Length: 124
Image (cartoon, rainbow, N blue to C red; front, side):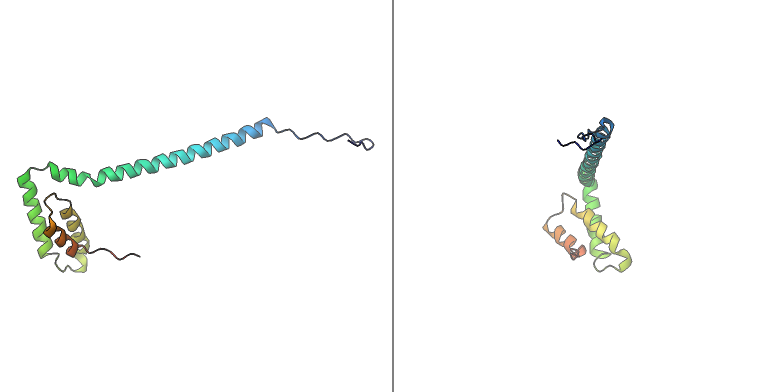
């Protein structure tokens, strides 16, 4: 190394231990944050899947006679009130159609009624 008068050679800068510790801690916090977000999303998805089957499980838990009566009443409502519903009833009819499709008794004729009452939404 060349020396110029009254100049000392520059040493390679050493990292400041606290600065590296802060950087490592920041990365760990970021990783923990992403892990928490991922676990939260997975937990929410699992809950939604479970909750979606809750209505079906409740229907299957009803005594057969009560479930059949509820099924027939829902079919009758879809056939009468929801055949050509006014705008004010469309949300209700959509919910009734979804409900009817969750019955174990919902056969092909029932599925056709649901399809007519609850046409697929056009893709946006």
